[in-house]
Length: 407
Image (cartoon, one colour):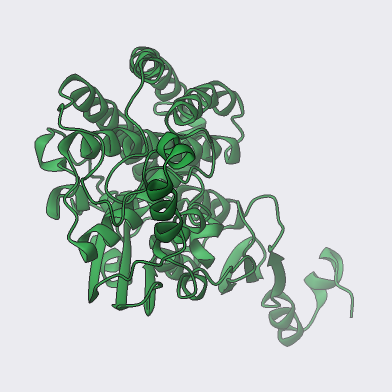
């Protein structure tokens, strides 16, 4: 029976109750423009209110862990790029540090500082994407276009360091491929001068904007207890009031040398997540400035000829260098037996690699702790009884990156 207002008003009570409680199933994804990636949520709706959600992942699953079990250690670096592609250098260097822990390679301080600079640039790039697109999802497009100019500046610095922009394959086992050149340092100093101005203007557009606050303040709040129970890390956990940061609690790459604060929120809502990421960008600027001003002079690569690739110029003219280059890339030098876990503070939280080696050329087992996959499990519970438009904004603020989610 088709109902309109007139028939509903005169319908028997039993039929009216059935009509009012009728639910609608809608498919949010896998290619919906509001999902920021290829994943799916099947929602049961009571009008505009979400009653339940069933999530599906794996649409771009590339079997990263299984691929790694059939590749030499060096050949795994390029496939880490495609995990969180918004901050590729953090993936690259997290992997390198894991292998260095297995091999017992000590990386020079200068190389560690350069890594810190690149990882903090990547964090800024990641947060620029998350917060500016959150603005787009609330109807504000201008801030997105404005702040993305700075992401382009970061990519230009990447080009000076490794020749690529998005998927960087940056660095080497044992350090960096090359030292910072003058052009890279000039671009870094220009970025440190220009970015704070742009970031402040971006913040002024949003943080006290009445429309933006109405759309985000109190939306998708999560308690510290619930966030910890789900295994949250990174900005999403810190927004709930927990000051856990891998850079501070398990320092790596000389992060203990730098002074910075861990920003935290209060109720873990969409607005808190936005504020935490904004403040983290200020902290990243400070860390980069400290690293650049205090760069050590002890070299950009470890003395580990069995694992660090020889300079390209030598490969072209020296038979021994050519042989070593081939042996290292093709995995002809076996890794020691052992198992290690190493984590870094990625753009979205604790980014970890659990590596098991049986002494062969490829890992016996590699597990990737991807923060997106872990905190996305809370999404169905977080959006229950929420209206659909708020669920979109909540998803945007969590910064679920499909490449990292599916692994």
